[in-house]
Image (cartoon, rainbow, N blue to C red; front, side, top):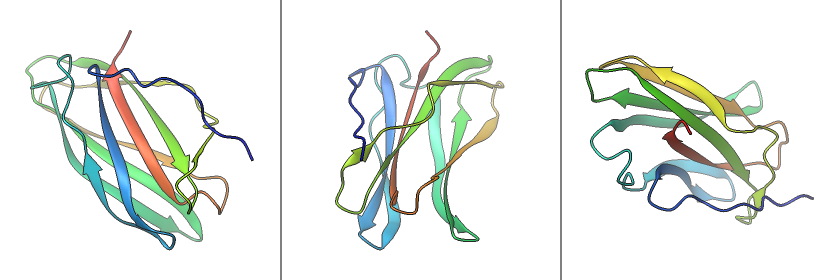
Length: 124
């Protein structure tokens, strides 16, 4: 089993974590946006889904500004014990139109991956 090791960019990102027990997510928590994102975006909805036995995480992000935003995001997955597993994805790019909402999603490729952590930041 591989574990994710990396540094979180404190203060410059926004994080969504699924919550719940070993059976899977029952809700989510959103951290306060860091100074770079404060007032620019809002998490409208975060839903873990089970599609034909596959775990899928969806996060809807709303642009609160009147200009498009260039963002980077990443999903990381945790097992039922809370251990963070390595992500197979690097930071991904998304452009969020002015005043628009965009759905970002990821699929767990292993049935042991139960909970997710979603991190969003301005593109570097």
